[in-house]
Length: 299
Image 1 (cartoon, one colour):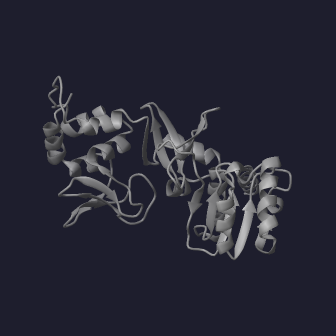
Image 2 (spheres, one colour):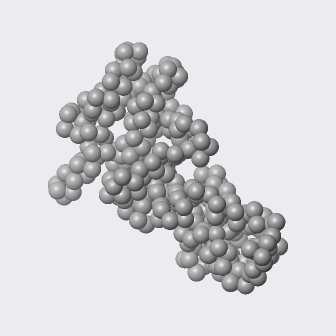
């Protein structure tokens, strides 16, 4: 085990500037701490800071906050012990027992750990589905399961995530709190909303919008994560919108869910499933992948 005092001492004495320089991360010193562009997503401003007093990492744009140890874990894609070795230069003294190992237990005993998305294999998987690093990092996180398996993680409203990594059968919907998984809402303060089933459909729609307009999608969105999530509460929630777009899968469940929504809001619904999929594609991600292929052929 490692004494808490040694952890604190190593974190306090860690040469952050030299470490960031070794990782090719440009930075500047401010009154509060070291400022730099987030290494976990694409951005133009230096929105990340490691504070001088707390030695905590904070992405001011996304709200992500975590310890210096966890920052190194995320950047190196390593476990807690390896991150400590990086910070300390392998100078920790093992002890048989310590009451001050809460931080170590926090990371080594958690089944699921979440970070900003940066794993190149996961980003390549997103690219294979037509989703750029910009869009993937804007809406998704990275999940490490059992210190071995990496996933693209799409967060749900009431805790939990939908996980995918491209491996056949390696797909999960989990809630760390033990509660049932909920829908995922993207709130852009719009009076228009689009309803989709899967998160890659939403990411694909975000890509499609950027291709057409050069901007981020301005509408609100609900990703059901499963058609069974269309509850009475969700249907009632839609009453606040001036326009409702349905873009669900072109299968029995998707069509039935579309019909449920349009039966209540026929006067302000537009069925985008028929517009884009037309019986040729199962979902919008399929459509977007084929759309990009056709674009490349025309070049």
